[in-house]
Length: 434
Image 1 (cartoon, rainbow, N blue to C red):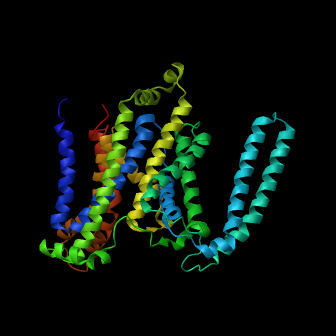
Image 2: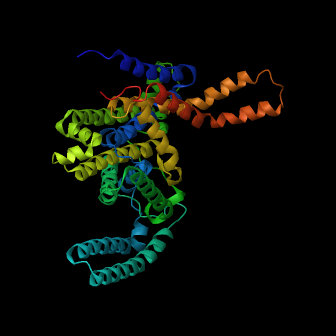
Image 3: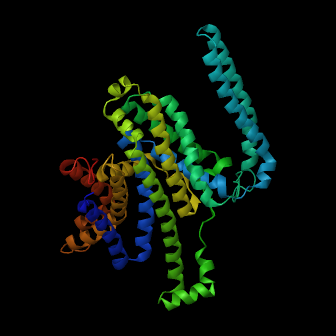
């Protein structure tokens, strides 16, 4: 097998950019870019499975990322015992009632012949189920949210290890993707995009408004960590001695140690997912998915169940995004539903996939690192360049002030320019599909 020096050079360039950030700015910034680059690479890998393998246009990515973040709260936060006593049992009963109503409606729809009788029974069942659900749900939610609303006001989680929430985030996103896929995957690509965006907005709106579940916009802080806290490391004589022997300040050393620890964990997850994605791509299943992507009618004529395969790949890609969402919330140490902006960050992930190379897993990973680096660094670089450009202008000049104030918009401008340049000169991405 010949070595592809171009691809190696592209990854080396990204590595050199991150190292340059460490040498010329700070190592804290460089490692933070590395960690978020790893998470972004995982997200773009999930989207690449859906779009690059199967041609599914999903722009509801942030909904699945948000579900991964929610998993960290449900799994690792301690339960609020007083809230459970106040309304936990009634809330569980309400949710079970809602689920039972939906299941009963589906079964009734399938087993009764079309006609007026089925319509009346469905309307009666759904109406009665809705009012019973609200009768149970509203008092329970109110009672839970009244329990110390400044500090808790929600049910809490299971107090399990935080690393367990990463696969749980993937499972939660996969479950929601199955529900979405069963209803929306029959739509044409543009309608599927609209449907997934709308569903992502619904998921995030629920997380923002259901305080009993995750405190809504009040945020959940203090999410447990898989690594020690910096303050604990600074109190450890052995760690302080080691940091001093390396010529590092203990405070700086503790921060670097924790961030590097996250980087190792994230890199392990990325490598496992990348290996699995590559094995899937080279397997008969991967070849079948690409055949469906290229010509659905021909694949269906050969006996392939196109809808079922689309559902499979949609669930897998969404699960990977859910894992990335759980990892990102773990890194932040808090769940902030207000920061999940579907259009903004979905656009960013899609740029990563397109620039890196749709249909190529290595390209998706490269795009994740490169675009995230540019997203972080374009604004300070733009400010530096604008200072040089406006240096001849007099202080207090309206034009100079306008140009300096425009630096904040450099990010979106740069992303657009990069996307246009890649589509013009390398339309299949920096590492195109073979």
